[in-house]
Length: 266
Image (cartoon, rainbow, N blue to C red; front, side, top):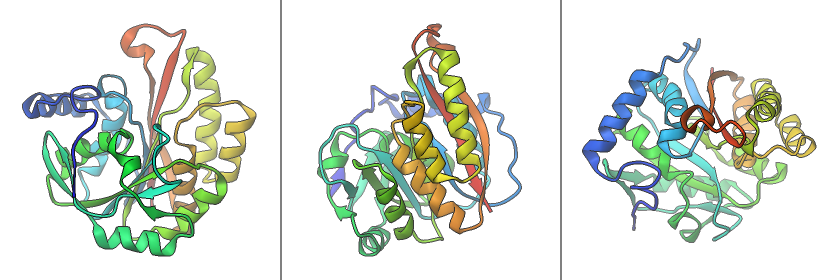
């Protein structure tokens, strides 16, 4: 089963050489702080590279120092298609940089350990939140990794906890999410830093409660909460690597989307 790119030429270049040059430039522009441990996960943005790529590169530049391993990427379901907690079962995903193997054994393990996850393809065909992470991983690790794509339609605490309990310890867990959407920059920053504080405290319940109370608009609260719960079980710590918004690119600070890269490490 081959899953072809849905947003190449839109969120990132479809030409391999152009994409590689763009990634090179993004990595040159990133200067992430060091983390005192081994990276086990991250919150990473998934907008068009022109907007969120520099923030994402702050994480992936750190990751380039570590050995390749199995990856699970959990993103929100923007299309509404497919099952509530969708796991892509097998095959390969294609990007302009080549093919990435889906880890069938890990996908099977996640589904078997979860109450809600099921094998499903439909949710993934047009969804960008997982896809946009792959060229970054290919840039730092080549083809020396495999991954499991997970898309969450229901993003409450129950589903987040269920996914966290289904992910084994020996993977890199990436939660793909942007933060505030189409809000004034000052308001978005104030709200999102309250969410980020809860993330850094590894408090999933507070994070989800604040999303509701503050009427915040991160698109992937479920994947983030799941990562928090999973990382907490491993005794991890978290560190904010970079924060930005779309206004820094297009000059419009009246209606921005916010982006953050947050590393989890042990």
